[in-house]
Image 1 (cartoon, rainbow, N blue to C red):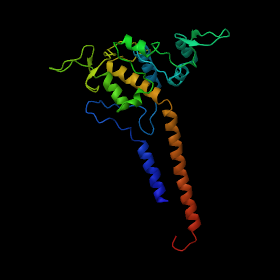
Image 2 (cartoon, rainbow, N blue to C red):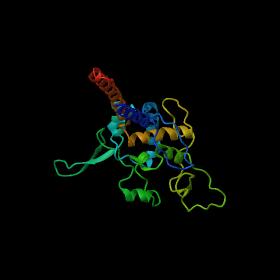
Image 3 (cartoon, one colour):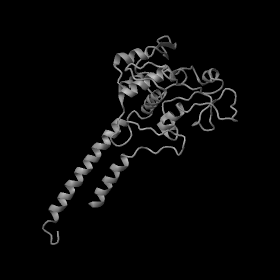
Length: 253
């Protein structure tokens, strides 16, 4: 019985530890609201992050695994979602004549890519293919800390470092040469909630949004985990009480 109780305690402590980050001295470790056993997404931050994505990142990067209706989890209303989706067109069909046609996107549609296909994306970006950002927060060692550090890691190259034409220096990116120009600059967006749009703030907000696109079920998973732990603690107490009751009449108990 004691071993079972210890197991429950260890599980609780393990769930409260933030995910491990990449072993890189260059990563700027941040304190994220969703980390730990009691962590949850900050919906105000997710809305700001979506605004940064929409106004900056969406020009080159898609979210092909996310549907517009999922933005309800970020705090957008049905009308806002319909308006955002209707700004894009998608191909549909065939119709009754057997022909494909285009229509305005609906909330049930997934985010429309900024490019018709990968080749068009490469042509528009000097041969580089901008990655889809749906799972980017889970696709890189260090996760959100890596994304934040990358977005804030642009700087002039050190003396003696020669960049390949068309490349930019980033102290976090492997090899330090990245095709993507610096995407964020001070005050380049105006937040609806009047939050100051500093470079670190925008980097944190859009990173939070991208972590949500990669783990939209995180809040629900944490809530279920807490309920499970509470149930296990209660069950442990009941089993211990039952054990005491059963063995109460035995000599030595």
